[in-house]
Length: 545
Figure 1 (spheres, rainbow, N blue to C red):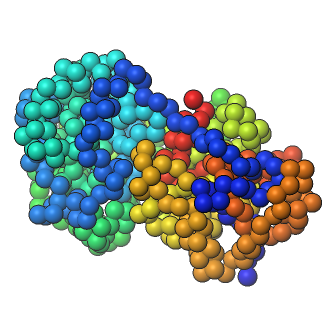
Figure 2 (tube, rainbow, N blue to C red):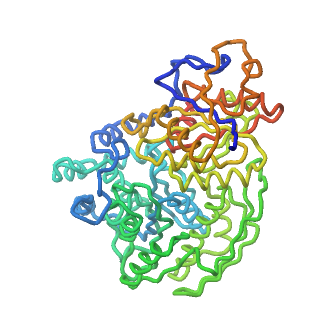
Figure 3 (tube, one colour):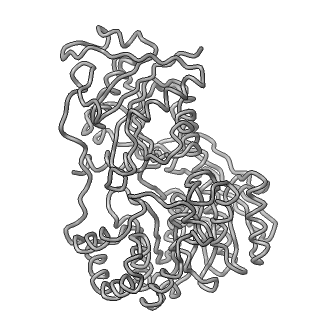
């Protein structure tokens, strides 16, 4: 039986914590950033619409069936707004994982070449403005510009909401605002991430004549109920973004049955298909380095693809800010898309592709905080990594990244998740991390509401069950509450399996820091905050409050 130092915690139901003073009864939770006061009118309007990020998505809502979202109402809204999505070319991206990162890589490549780029992604981390980036610098739309645009378009939006008897959703309306802004700002090309599935997603109002490329990054089991209940139905839903005669780039790797579905769809639509997992992809991760104190991974991106399109490039020693083998695959997928755009008359040099890949960055994707930020969180000297992983696939990618980047470091996890996720599968993947000392559980609001939040006690049960399946020893240990008692005196340092009841997110991080400090001496180790982008948002909100 493998023994680990595994530390479980929970909050709300047990706010009085039981280790040594630094985990304590607290009424204060981490604050999140408030939206700019200029956006108050828009936010209030959007908050009165149905928001499936808060409530959860209905069964089969993303399928191309009678139960799917009604794309007709989105088309009506866009028509009332003058179909702004037809004034620029679009790269449309769907996929279970990797959509946002691929969008970030490709947008950065296009900007490096000097194009005016609009990028639309979801969800956001700190402010809704992050969902819309504009121009040649990739900054989130300003509060002033967004507020001004909403006020100008509000009358049309209200007319559409009334026509649809109030059925237009938060996501539909904000998607329309994004497309309208792109048109107003004379965007040359937009990179648009689908919200759910593809076929019935609000972003899928793009006509074939306006589509540059479709991209499908991966197909996994997230949102199973909403997308038909099987991997095959999910693949079918995502393939709904493919348009007649327009190229399709697929990321992968996919299991054969799923790749077959995607290839059949491309064939039926006479769409050339390029696979980032083609045997001609000889890209590799070579190691790690630091640039201005920021960890980067050294990669070679080497492509020689001959089917449908003749695509080739050799970029050696690319320094990616986004870490992990999965991010290399996302970078390769974006590179394939850039090469496909070249075939259509866009001009993207090898230098711009390299520069764009190296400058791309997303919050909450293996994001390592600065030492100043760690100090603000009360964990001086610790390495704090934030990652929004929330599926078993993304947990596996995170585990691999941790083992590659920090092969000998001791670490603790701080976890909070939404209630519809695969908690057991998530736990199995992260319990495989090499030198795991502790796991804490806490709770954060999901999209600003508690309805989708998982109680920390339920998360704890899932991890206990996973540890039993994996023959890992877990001890339910409650340490006496004592302000002056050290971990050594409490017997925690010697224990190889620990269960702790803890309070707020900040308290969990403090407890993890104390455990690591007493166990590792001068090297405090790594604190990994994960389970959702919402827990990442809470940490970053605390830093910027």
